[in-house]
Image (cartoon, rainbow, N blue to C red):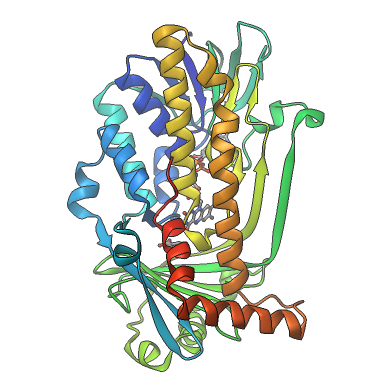
Length: 389
Ligand code: FAS
Ligand code: PHB
């Protein structure tokens, strides 16, 4: 087999890259370990920046998003028993869209099918070869046969636990990490959202987030131990813990019901600055992870794909190698600012067990300043709607 770009990983990053390259006349093959149902069964991100929305439209997959997505002009912080609305539209002139990653991935798979794109599922034992030469290839097992895919470039879109980043020799990987002393326990329930916008709540018991997917599908999270087992959280226990962390009026209004999905996500900040190794380019979670507090994971992946697709299109179009040579530096300028924002939002909204009394006062002062200063709210808002590409 041969293709222009071998893409390891059929999540949003890999699918979006494949779609953008195909629309520019560049071939690719997506190698995905899991089944399509498995990929679509993962419940993850929920908020799209306007940059991500524009990229999806440019990729030809924005039609259902624009029809079914919920435009949100603001969100609220619940702190000290009250709520404080962050008016994104008034502060920035922009908004975000609530449209689940599951739906984005569904739309991307449908578009790949419609264009006759090649996405192989159930791929095993992926290994990368000759990345520093001019004839790289990817070997793998598929449907019981050993295969070799010759290519010009390999895109590592295989998420945090995939093999492509590990293909870069450890001494060459410049890595940075912060693992948080807690996780998020999330549920999905076929209930009406407690409010028409998202609510980020901070409380002595811990952080809570009220989100949604549509008017009859709610997504809730509570801060939990990093090693929490979802099986130890029957629905009633989850709802009680969530109510306790919300202001009384919201706790009262909360519609509860059976969970249709329940999972724990660990929280970490991570960056591998080595986003290129010869003919291998990393994008999305393969290169970086943010705590979901700032709703940035999927959006940061989209920005990487914008930069990488532009660079590959330039190389195939005019032979210009400069954008590929500059890909990592360009992506990292936005990655580090987004890492900062996600770390900062996590720091001010969560309960850190090992914080000193002074640090707890600093956290409270940060929240008081944020909710009383239009300058502080504007800084929050411009990061939340998305920094420029
Ligand atoms: P992904 O991890 O989505 O996709 C990588 C793909 O590569 C997967 O399909 C995987 O099966 C495949 N793969 C891995 N190893 C392979 C191999 N050896 N061979 C072939 N394929 C392989 N972001 C938010 O903005 N908000 C959230 O609330 C949020 N919640 C999250 C919860 C969890 C549990 C996780 C893990 C992430 C969450 N994220 C959230 C971040 C998430 O949305 C990611 O940013 C997004 O999925 C990134 O997309 P990809 O880079 O495509 O990586
Ligand atoms: C979600 O709806 O899953 C979601 C929304 C905002 C976040 C994180 C997750 O910051």
